[in-house]
Amino acid sequence: MTIRRFIPWPDKRLRTPCAAVPEITDEVRGIWDDMIETMDAMPGVGLAAPQIGVMLQLAVVDASQARNKRIRMANPTILELSAKPNEYEEASPNLPGMSAKITRPRALSVRYLDENGVIARREFVGLEATSVQHQIDHLAGKMYFDRLSKTKRDMLLRKARKLNG
Image 1 (tube, helix red, strand yellow):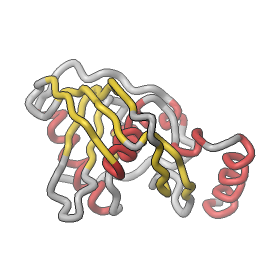
Image 2 (cartoon, helix red, strand yellow; image 1 turned 180 degrees about the vertical axis):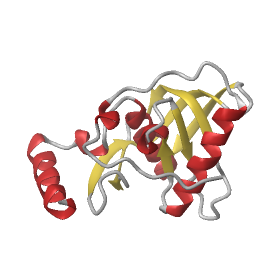
Image 3 (tube, helix red, strand yellow; image 1 turned 45 degrees about the vertical axis):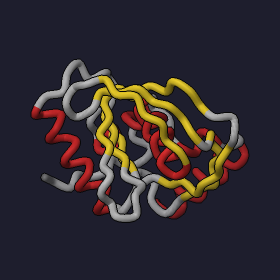
């Protein structure tokens, strides 16, 4: 396993939708292993493949206290979203030093291919649900700050440019 380097914002790959994963192979499992090691090194509760320059619909999430509930997802698709909102401070290692309060649905249901290549359906709630939605956004070429108003997004990006040169 290898800790991978994050591609820096505004790399165009962070704005590019990822390709679907046709099947789960040893190569895909190796990418997931690297993603988990990279996520743990952040530390963070989720990571999407394009954040490390891999343009495939792959994500990992682990919002557990013990860091022992790894969820590996390929081609995740949202099936249902709850009407009840939740707000969390979100950030990305691709834009270091920046974060913003983002409101998203509190719970969701997702269909994805698991590490065995089996179609799974799972419900996520709270921080885990927020992380899954955040990763699915990355896979679609979106960043968390795209969910801010134009004024707040522009302020955040101006501040980021000053901070990160």
